[in-house]
Length: 207
Image 1 (tube, rainbow, N blue to C red):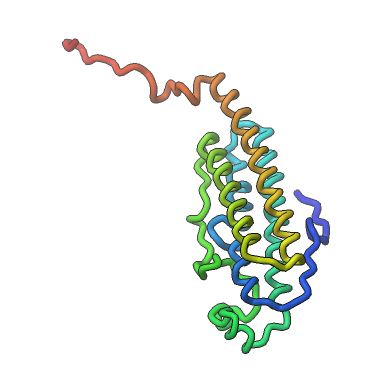
Image 2 (image 1 turned 135 degrees about the horizontal axis):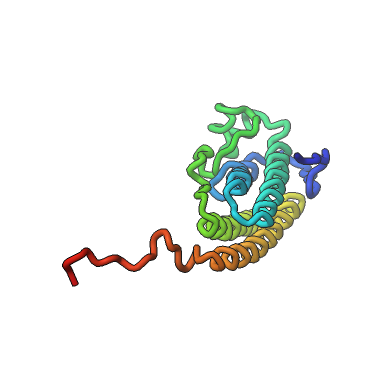
């Protein structure tokens, strides 16, 4: 289905160990607005998308989100490479270290584990695409918060790239929503759905 290139979408070359920074960035792996939930959201929604070109867009963006997840994991890995127990304890990474050592495990910055309740696949084109627009904006905000806190250039550059991609995805989903609404409106599906919106009938003998 996919051709996998064995390289990151944007290079990650972090030259120091910093578990404190890793604990923040890991939120974009397993947090509520992270790349894991984004990829699962889009790759699940594509099956019930009635507009084939929009289903293809969901496949494309969902696949790219997997590449973004790979970047985030590479960043966390590099920031915790050669981590000592003393460093973990000194920089607030000790609870994670106890459970996972330096293995990659999806959680939010606050420590909450990833859960499938963090994304939705509703089977309704308008609902799903509207959620996707909100999801991309929330992910953008998280990247901007990370950039406000993190000062190291070798960490900031990949984060800036990922933030820019969230903006592009938001634009693509906005276009997809308009295209989908046009198609559904033409079938009286969105603004007027005949399955639900028929005028109420008046029982015989009344009115």
